[in-house]
Amino acid sequence: MTQTLTAALAEAIGAERVTSDPDALAARRYDQWAVSHLRDWRGQPLPTAGCVVRPRSTAEVQKVVALANAAGTAVIPFGLGSGVCGGISPTPDAILLDLSEFNGVRSIDETNLLASFDAGKNGLEAEEAVAARGLTIGHWPQSIAISSVGGWVSTRASGQFSTAYGNIEDIVYSLEVVLPNGELVTLGKAPRAAAGPDLRHLVMGAEGTMGVITGVTLALRRKPERQALSAFYAPSMEAGFEAQRQIVQADWRPPVMRQYDAREVRRMFRDYARDDQSLLIMVHEGPAARVEVELAEVASIAQAAGLSPADPAACAGWLERRNHVPAWREMFERGFVADTVEISGGWTTIGRIYDDAVTSLNGVPGVINASAHSSHVYRTGLNLYFSFAAALQDTAQMEPTYFECWRRVMEATARHGGGVAHHHGAGRLRKPYLAWDLGEGGVELLRTLKRAVDPRGIMNPGNLIPDA
Ligand SMILES: Cc1cc2nc3c(=O)[nH]c(=O)nc-3n(C[C@H](O)[C@H](O)[C@H](O)COP(=O)(O)OP(=O)(O)OC[C@H]3O[C@@H](n4cnc5c(N)ncnc54)[C@H](O)[C@@H]3O)c2cc1C
Image (cartoon, rainbow, N blue to C red; front, side):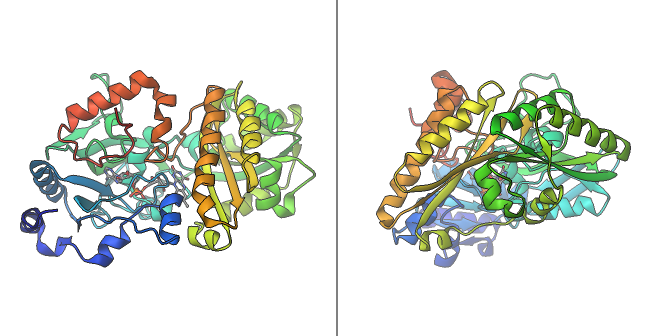
C-alpha cells in the first residue's frame, strides 16, 4: 500500500475514515472461518490489510473504489465479518473496506412493503426497524445479530424461516452497487421484470468479487397474525424426509421445518430424545384460520407417513436458543476441531447423501461426531446441515482433519448429484469444489464475467473464483 494512495484516500473521504492502526487492522484480519481462527490460535501470523477505510456514504465508496482501481490496488469489502468460508483474508497490499459504519435506514414504505438500508446495516437492527411498524423482513439467519444486509446478499444467505419466506434472493427487491471502476448502478426497480437477464444475480453470491453493494432494498411482509408450533418423531431420517416431501408438495408452507437425526436429538433436545428416533420440528405462521388448517393437515400427513406426535415444547426450546453463537477458541482449547457443512439435494438423492456423508465422516481418524439436520425445504428437495467434530491431542492434526472432513462431505454430496453449497457461500473454503456445482464451463463463464466487470482484478482477489 503506497503512502500516496493512503493520502489520496484520506483526502477523498477524510483522514479519520482511513487508518493503519495495528489494532484496527488486526480486528479485521479474518471472518468467522474456523481455519483462520485455528491458525491464529496456533500462533501462525495472519496477514492484515494495508489500511482500513470506513466510508459512510455511497459517494465515499465510489471515491475509494475509483482510487483503488486507478492504482490497481485490491479492495476487500467487509460487512460484519460473520462469513464462515474465508471470504475475508486480507493482504498488506489491500484496502479493507469496512462497511459497518455505513448503516442507515434509508426508507420504510408500508404500502409497497419495501425497506431500504445502507449495506452495512446490522441485520437484527434492520429487522427491528421494520418490526416497529408491524412488519418483518422474514430473513432470520442464526447470525442475524452479527451480520449485515449487504453481507446477506453477497453470500446468498438463508434464514431459518426460509421454507415459507424464501432465501435472500427471494427477498431482495433492488440493489445499489458500486462497480470496480467506481461507477454506480441500481439493479431492480419493480416487482418483476423481463428486461434481459436479472443483473442483481451478478452480485448476489459474488462475495465481494464483482463490486461493492452499497444499498439494499428488501421486500417486506406484515407480521403474521398467528404462530403455532408442532413436533413429530420419525422412525428414520428417510421417513422424516418423506413426510416433509409430502407436506411441501401438498403446498403447506410452515416457514420453519427442521429435522434432526438421533445423534443431534440427543445432543440438542436431550429432554425429548426417544430411542433412536429423528425429530421434526415446525413453526407455522400466517392468518389464524390458515394456521389452524395447516396444523391439522400437516399432522395428518405426518402420521400417515409413520411419524408420531412429539411435544411442541421441543420446538419452543429451539426458538429460544436458536441464535447462540459458539466461540472457536474455546473448542480448540478443549482439543476439538469442528464445523458445519451445508449442502442440498433432490428428494430421491438426499437420503443417500446423508448416509454416505455420515459414514464417510465417521471414517476420519479422531472424528467423534458426524450428524446432520435439514433446515430449508423446497418442492424439489431439501438441504442438509452436517456437523462434524474431531478430538485431537496433536493440534497439528486439526487443520488436515478439518479439510479431510470437508472433502468427504463435498464428495459424498457430488457423488449423488447434490449441490455442494446451500447457503454459506464458497469463499476460499469451497473454491476448489465450485466446478462441481457450476461445471467447468460455468466456472469459465464466471471468470469471463469477472474479467469484463473487473478488468484490473481489484475486487476481493483470490476469493470464490477458481484460478484458471
Ligand atoms: C454463528 C453463525 C451462524 C450463521 N448462521 C447463518 C445462517 O443461518 N444462514 C446463513 O446464510 N449464513 C449464516 N452464517 C454465515 C454468515 O453470517 C453469512 O454468510 C452472512 O451473510 C455474512 O454477512 P456479513 O455481513 O458478516 O459478511 P462478511 O463476513 O463481512 O462478508 C462476507 C463476504 O461478502 C463480502 N461482502 C460483505 N459485504 C459486502 C458488500 N456490501 N458488498 C460486496 N461484498 C460484500 C465480503 O467481502 C465477504 O466475501 C452464520 C455465521 C455464523 C458465524
